[in-house]
Length: 384
Image 1 (cartoon, rainbow, N blue to C red):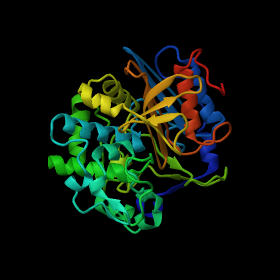
Image 2 (cartoon, rainbow, N blue to C red):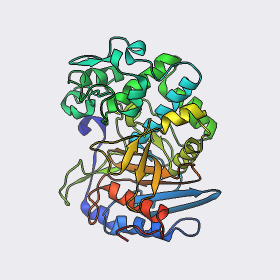
Image 3 (cartoon, rainbow, N blue to C red):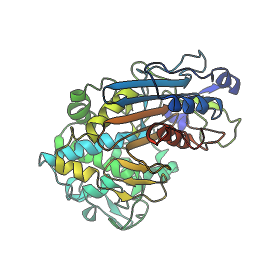
């Protein structure tokens, strides 16, 4: 897939190691426990670079370790943009819920009503699936990304093609009877936004969220735009290889058309914090839609300790504290943005690689330790 979707540049292990020195926090006092985890993520976890920004009331703290570019050794900067993967889902769900608040659609509307004839075959029935079930990942619709061979048949797959791939497989469960993470749900949700508004999903996200909030580094790129516009960190991948000596590739330029509404957006740590502060704090949705978004169900075969609402999730940390937000993973970039339920304190973290070693099997373990260092009593993670 990546031979088509990205321009791959081979990076030697020596170059990565040469750029893997930690850096001190760039701004703001305190949060030493978070900085220690960032440093260890590089020295022990072997990630190229990691950053974190914390917003606590009016206070802002930024920390980083490692590098944005393994060739030059440039460190990561607060303004650097990166791909946010499934955090895109929180933006899409917010748009749908705002449309519901305006009476443009209803969460109990069926997929068949908005996209007639698209979700049919092999046991799928769009007339039995609601928009709420799409946003909550309770539809049972097969995840097209599980059929990589079919996705790879299209250099720039359209949303319709992605859904057609999904419905060549039977549903995972009957709608509303279980929970299962499926990218198809959000591709369909993005299509409903476009059908209901007559505008592109990218335009609706800009008009309803990023523009009003002043998120100048956040956008959904066109299918044929492989670049990251503006200042950005380079993105590195090992193509899911477990080999500690696996080749590392630069996938900063990436075709994200297979992800689109499910995971195609680009943002910054500061923008993500501003978005989630507004979302958690009730400034983007009316009370009824806010309740819908944050009514959760337990997840299954996903991230431990999580429950899922509509485009957002809660996570119970090992210390017992619960935080709210969303994470995302895409080739070369893994991110988390979580905070208190009222949005008064939020933390955004990004690794510009998709692996980890040492005490962590992947960046998710690093992110959990970062959250523990910030939100748990005593501010220490299990592996500090």
